[in-house]
Amino acid sequence: MSSKAAFFDVDGTLVKTNVVHVYAYYAMNRGSVLGIAGRTLSTALSVPLFGVMDAVDRKTFNEFFYRYYAGLSEDRLVTIAEDMFEDVLQPALFEQTQDLIDQARRSGCKIVLVTGALDFTMRPLARHLGADDMIANKMQFVGGKATGKVIPPIIEGANKANAIRAYCTKEGLSLDKCHGYSDSASDYAMLAVVGRPTAVNPDLRLRSIARAYNWPILDLK
Image 1 (cartoon, rainbow, N blue to C red):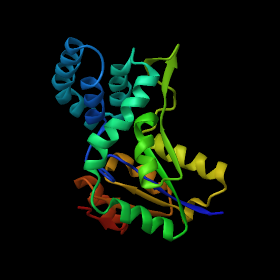
Image 2: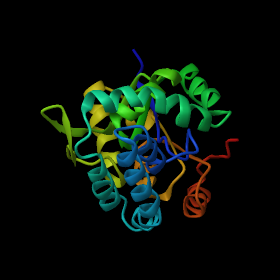
Image 3: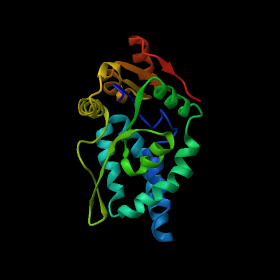
Image 4: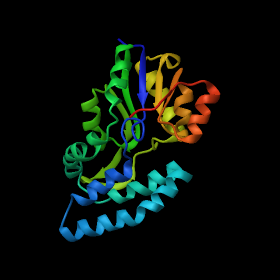
């Protein structure tokens, strides 16, 4: 049994996409033609707002963004997730993503995806990459329909670090032996909580932090 894990952020770290691309795919693949057009236009008009909110406060962004899923059926969401993986996520994988995952596995790590995305949207990706587990947001469903609310705690920022700590306790893993990978300074807490953090395709702030702490920096293609 492994005593350590490698925790991977997804957006910007393993794939070149984000949650807005994922929602846009759902918007274009559900319901009537008129409904699709309305949701697609609504998503397109909201993208600048999403970008601002994401930069200012990731938690608020997530809470606001997932309201857009309200009313969608669980069965439909899960079904579309498979197509979305093939059409959106798989083509957006960095060429070196699988090598990075395989290298962590060879070093004896359990592979765990840690993402603010919704769990059902990430399952096909986790399966494709051979991940052992996943820490992700979970949508609340009532009567088979999404409420637009995420079951707390929302996985973002400091909560990612808390979730990793709790996961290691539950699985009997040694935090100081664990690896963490992310592209964003918003995941500083996630990287700082593990013993072996790595900045992957880091934004300017994380690149600066990584240099200050002597963390490895990887630029994937």
